[in-house]
Structure formats: C-alpha cells, structure tokens
Length: 495
Ligand code: NDP
Image (cartoon, rainbow, N blue to C red):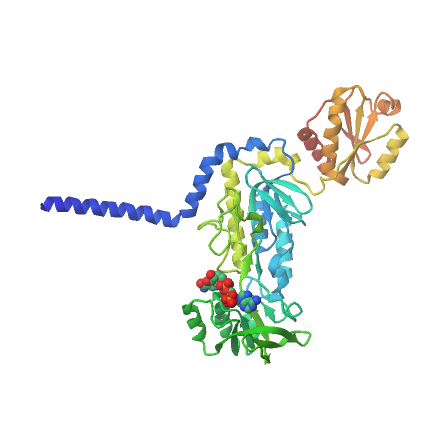
C-alpha cells in the first residue's frame, strides 16, 4: 500500500514537471512556434529561390514607411549588403517630423525631429538603401516574392517586408488645434512634459493613455486638468487612482474642448464646454495633451496578418516576425505600449536583423544578389527605351557629342538576322536600367558601309562600346539580359 502510494506520487510529480516544462516553453516561444510551423509547411515550394530567375522588379528587402523604425531596419538591411528599398509613404519621416524639438533621443541633446529623421535617412541611404517617394497600395501574400503595388502604379516583388507604417493619433478637429499643433498641442506627454514646468495643462480623454499622460505631466506642470467628455472615465480604476494620487491632478467630467486659442506663438487658453449644460468657460492653459487614443495604420494588412486585441500587428515576443514568414513589423504599428521614437528605432534594428537572418537561412547570399541585380526594381528603369538608328559617320560624331559622358553602344544588325532581332528588346531593356549613363543606337550593317568599315564589323549581331570617345569593348554574340547588364555595368564603372 505504502509502495503503491509512493509510485503514484512519483508519477504525479513527473507528469507535473513535464507539463510545467512544456508550459514554460510555450510561454517563452509561443509566436516563434507559430511562425516556425507556417514556415515548415510552406518552405519548400513557397519560398523557392529558383522562382526569382527572370522575375522583374525584385526587391530583396522592402521597407514600408520612413519613421525611425523603418529607417533603422533599412539601415541594417542595407549595411548587410542586401538590396533595400524604402517606400516612404504619405508622411515621409513619420510623426517625428510633426514635433518641434526632441530631448530624449539617446546620445543626442536637444534636436529637431526633422533633423533626426533627415540624419537617419541619409545614414540608411549612405549604405545603399533606395528611397522611393510613393505609397504602398496593396500587398499580396498569397504569392512569393510578395507582390506590392503602389499608388503611382509601381509593382515590386519583395522577398522580405518590414512594415513600419506607424499610427495616427486621434484628433479632436476643434478650431485652433491645427494652428497650435507642436506649439502647445501635442499627443506625447513623455516627449513634451519637461517643457511645461510650472504650467497649467489639460489632458483630453478618459482612457488609460490620458491617465498615463496626466501622471507624466504631474511631475512638471503646476496643475494638470483631465477633461472627460462623459460622466465616466474608460480608464481602469487603478490608473485613475494613480493619477489622482498626485495632488496637482484633477479630473473634470462632462467637459470637452470647444476651441484652442493662443498668441500666434503658443497656446494661452482654451474654451471649455460642459457637455451636459452646454455652458462655455475660458480656461488659462499653456498645454493641451490629446490622450484620446491612436489608430495603428494597418489598412494594408487587415485580414492578412495576425493583430492584437488593440488592433496592432502581432509580433515576437522575442523578435519582430509577424504571422507571415519573411514579414516583420516594428514601431507604433506593432507597439501598443511604449510609442517612443527610440523604442521604434531599437525595434526597427531588431526587424532589420530578423530579415537579414531570415534571408540568409533561405539561402539568399551575395553571389545570388549579383546574379539578380539586373532584375532589381529601379527608379530609373520604368521608362521604355526604343533604339534609334544612325546611318553615317557624321551622325555617329553627333551622337558622341551629345553623349555627355554616357557610354555609347552601337548595335550592328541586319533586318534578316534572327539573332539581331532577339537582341534589340534585350538592349532596350538593359539601356532603360541605366538611363543617362548609357545610350545605344542601331546601325543597319547592310546600309551603313562607312560605319561598318570604320569599326571593322565582321558579322552581325555585333556590339561596340565607346567610352569617352574610345572603343572599350566589342561583343560578337547574342547576349542574355543578365550578361549584357553585367558587361555594360563594368564598362560604366570602369575608371
Ligand atoms: P481608449 O480608446 O481606451 O480611450 C480613449 C478615451 O478618449 C476615451 O475616454 C474616449 O471617450 C476619449 N475620446 C475619444 N475621442 C474623443 C474626443 N473626440 N473627444 C474627447 N474624448 C474622446 O484609448 P487609450 O489610448 O486610452 O487606450 C487604448 C488601449 O491601450 C486600451 O485598451 C488601454 O487599456 C491600453 N493602454 C494601457 C496602458 C497601460 O496599461 N499602462 C496605457 C495606455 C493604454 P469615450 O469613453 O467617451 O469614448
């Protein structure tokens, strides 16, 4: 009986330990596990690098948005030598460009938000990140590379995507709000509270964000008045209690702002309306903090990526991966807690590294990137080029004169040579990728005898490359797009 009880106890403890171990693992890696499962199911056929051959407008790493999260991700992608494109979106630079000064950007003193974003943009671009002023319109995750179309009609095929589309703070739309935005009217207490030492400030809203703003402001302002538009506050009782623990915080119910007034430079007063009696009163205040919530900008991915209960993109927990392999998110679009530029930048770095590692695990490397380069998306490459024809040495001299440093290509052909006809669209495509760095003219070898003689053309198709007036290359064979692209690129880069 005693022995039987001992065995029972041992089995129970063993089962308990096993359940605990599995439970702890689940707690630490729940999202990783989910992403991992999706990857193994689809990896072999869905993420096949062979699909990239011959596909146009490829983008190995596409970053959506240009706030601190996006540009930090782009910096890490580009610095790892992965071709990176930043689709800058509707508001290049993000919310920081709408604030005046920042004091909490690590390692830097007081600095303008616009300056921070300009520096970040230049830093990412200096490592080769391509900045594109356009807005992503749709993403198709059902095919890989993922297809992204833009408002201007561009089409990109992305191997990996970082979503850093940010969030939009809700606005009141009352008179004076727009005029004094960044000059007393703001949404970020952590950023701007220190500018309100000794002031009377109001916080609008009755949720947890408003209470948090009030707590933050209470350390600096003389008086903090929280205006709640109804007779109950949505915030948790605990947050309300914490706010009211500060002696300089007071909550006013059934109060809303009717107008924000100022002295042209900053806010000086507000018109407050009692939502029950409609009575209007003037209050002297120097700061208006909107704590009425933020909407993550998730229109692009709604129904396509997992989101949290607050509507943010679900990530991590120990990385920035979303529910779709090769797609990461960072910044306010996936952060419902910190909403700070520094945090967004840090998470953007994690997102960049997550992509670098994901691509590497997929087998994407420098050698492959070199082969795919002719097929990369190019801002210049959209224009269709049609080769013009020249017929004499005099016309060739004119072409050289107009070239202004560009490489000049002569494509000797005859109308009855099939290889020559194949080469023409190849040349037009390659030339379109280099725009002002190279030009090409057709020469009908059965007509332009002086040019044929001058360049010793033995047969067709025959390509002659001229740089700074000197012949630097001759090719007597049909070439593929990739071959011609690589050959011409070397000549363009030749010193
Ligand atoms: P919420 O949607 O919870 O609250 C918004 C508040 O703003 C409500 O009181 C709402 O009033 C008010 N409001 C909305 N529009 C207006 C308007 N035009 N004029 C005046 N008042 C307006 O947003 P939060 O950002 O506060 O919170 C979002 C989520 O994040 C919540 O789930 C919250 O718990 C969580 N959070 C948690 C924190 C924490 O745990 N520390 C901190 C911050 C947020 P009404 O109720 O009348 O609609």
